[in-house]
Image (cartoon, rainbow, N blue to C red; front, side, top):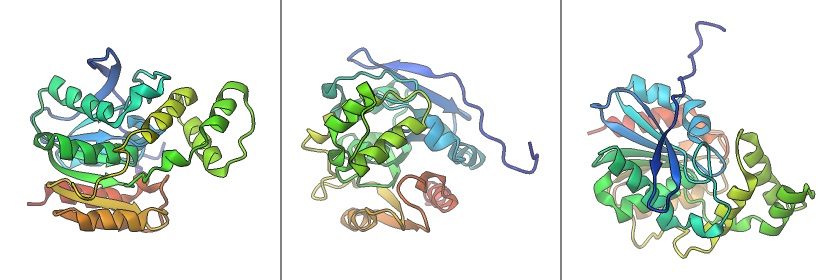
Length: 266
């Protein structure tokens, strides 16, 4: 391996946090526990490793003097993967993060979220503002992208290998299969559960009051919606990620640099 290239951050063994429902949430901690903490929450069909470690975020946050607390959301990574849609309401995903913070005895953190993780972060900042000092929300809103998923076709593919005709659903299946260990039926349940929630979309009439940095790729179809969310947020800022679409934006150096600068700004 070329010694001049940045080396990947070592992945610690997961530490499991138990939710009130008896589900295990995998967490990962890097850095000095006395340093300011960044809670890093990944997107749909991704994981802490895929979204934050492999892209250099954990490395760069550690170099900037932060502790990083990563989470595999329910249905992802090393966390439990129930296949019931009822397990994946927005309120439950938010409460999982509150439970993680309470378990680690963290009152308030800086928050980094992408896509689904950004959507959950918006809700956490609104519903439990005492826990979020400031937040970086990338690739938000999901809108209701998971509502565009053809649940029937996705389930037939997962169960029987039936080819998927719908291009959006095919893209999501490809995304899900890209990450080792994903359970497609659990992710279909998540998509189904999220689409039934009345709070799946960010509520622009009730935005977070903290400082929020929104970041979206210039090739992402939701960029204008993201910009509008930033404008609707009292302390919102917006940064474009040149040449990035929704699925490769987490690897943007512009994104990492802007986020670290934002976390450290006075």
